[in-house]
Amino acid sequence: MKTYPKMTILVMLISTCNTMIADHIVTFFMRPYPHLEKTEKAISKEYAAKKSAKLKMAGKIAKYTLRSILESNTAAGIFCTYSGQLAISNPDGQVTFARRQQDKAVKLLVTKKINPILMEKQTIHHWEFELDADAALYLVEQKEDQETSVQFWDIEKLPIPEDNNISLDTIVIFAKPSAIFVPEGIIPTEHGMQLILPDIYVKKNVDKLSSSLYVLNLKRFFNFTKRRYKTKEKQFSIQIHG
Image (tube, rainbow, N blue to C red; front, side, top):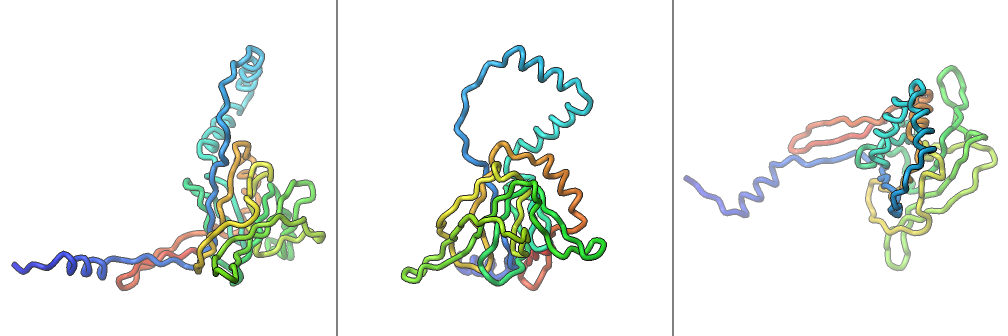
């Protein structure tokens, strides 16, 4: 029986293993906002009676049950849009879109509502800010230090534009601005073909239930992001499509 040195076996395994290649993407992670632990409070009789009365109302138990499921993982289940694509943060809090731009700067909009401006039937001309909805707008731009060649993200808060238009390079997070923390300033990063944005932090007061119901009315205007798997010779490719 012919034997092979360990290094030869290792080289053979590496050469025959499938590799994974992904299309260019825009992605980021949502993380639970770090909260200080609160001491337990005694529940008063008045509070217990008030909650008991609410639970007797039709539909309240189902509502609280669904809210409890959604809140079990703070960073999961938050809807976002970008360049005609609709995505939802996965159980790890990751949001991924197919990259539709060459430059390394995107806008990040946190709001519960956006207003579609229609050309004809379901053809969208552009999106605008909802006048009665709170909104926070940020510019997330990748830059490079000229002396050290170190890559970093520069995040700054922007005023709401006077024309109320939402540009195509805007990622919209459907939530109240008070429930989402976007770190401002400089955050180190690495150079790459993918736009891996800094982490976004989700607070416990995020209302995913009402946001999800609102997005249901808009989903016909978007394509859900989906993954297509393609096998090549000695390669395994994952493609993100919007």
